Length: 291
Image (cartoon, rainbow, N blue to C red):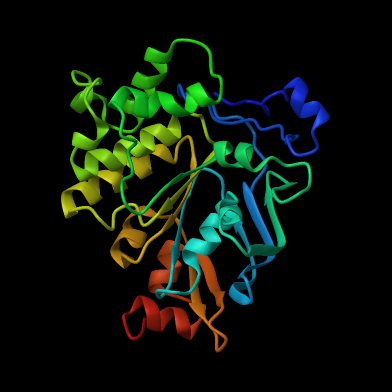
């Protein structure tokens, strides 16, 4: 359980880039009483993202509620994935990408000069559109992150716990040394979720995690998400309106302006967005009249 920020190493204390002074109290992974936490977990203030001269999203301000599933919906090209990747600084890896505004995590500016992007990505994990298990055994896929982060302790217990939380343990417990690449698509995606969970993140980002899966595997992932929200904050990009309606509690609708930059039209409880949206653009999109 991550109850406070990880103490910086001696090297971190002398390097301005390896520091993240955030103290967090979280719900116990073992079902203890939930602790008091500041809300929201993520705050965006006038965020714009650029790729070179092209502005992909503009002036987005929103709060992400703790221990809830928030869906990002909108037409293709409106910047949903860019917005998602801005939360854990994945856009930093794209040449020419830059961000203006602020992204706050428990009140800490994630783009501040003393914040380590690698530590950001440990606390804010990500599951991608297509399952991407490493060409390693099932066991080593899950153990990879903890080993890289220098986790000491019972690795067998950590691997089992992560696979159980990803609802995969019963299916793979007798073949942990087999390649993760040999699993079905849905199993591979749950393995990737287990891999993300193993480093004890606080937030899990999911970029269309079911787009490559069949309906049965999709339902399994949705059910897993609903279970995981007890201990994690989940933000999901989806083009599937039914999935957003089924699985999320909050929905953010984005669309594009004349300059092709994505902007936020509306955010609210999912039930309201789908049944009584405040903006006509939202109503047109969720009813299928455009997009």
